[in-house]
Amino acid sequence: MMKYLALGDSYTIGEQVDAALNFPNQLVKLSTSNPNPVVLDKLIAVTGWTTDELAIAIEKERPSFDYDLVTLLIGVNNQYRGRSMDEYAWQFYSLLCQSILFVNAEPQNVIVLSIPDWGLTPFNTERDKDLTSKEIDAFNAINKKTTLELGCRYIDITRSTRIHAEDLSFLAEDRLHYSGKEYRLWAEKINSLIR
Image (cartoon, rainbow, N blue to C red):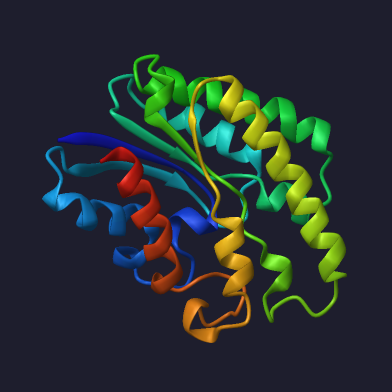
């Protein structure tokens, strides 16, 4: 059994969908046929969180250091709120270092997911879509570089969210967050990696 800690924001909890359909819980279900099935022990995520807000929550929750798997997906709200990339870089680095400690200093057991491109969804009627995509690419360049430098694993989910950005079957009711159909694709990628 793989003891699993999921860290993030609305895309980790699965805003507007049943909890069973978020990607951590779909990963658990997909992994039942694995030699080492995944068990979701703790999920620390709230809609709207930025990197610093996640860090405060982790400090309060105090996860143990005996996890077999950690996923980290954070940064969309930093971009959305216009926070600086320099701030994101050092706060993300700190979160990733903590994540590595939670898996007993085994960085390959930490999986970072890229930031989805919310800007292309029908929800976005006010901001420049191309500019938003460029900003998300810049934030993702930071988290990818840091992830690989620290020896963790990286999964690109941004491409999928761009492909399905206007397909309502892949979106939740608010047309900003995603449906279980999109989250399943993420869970499949993670499951393939851990298997």
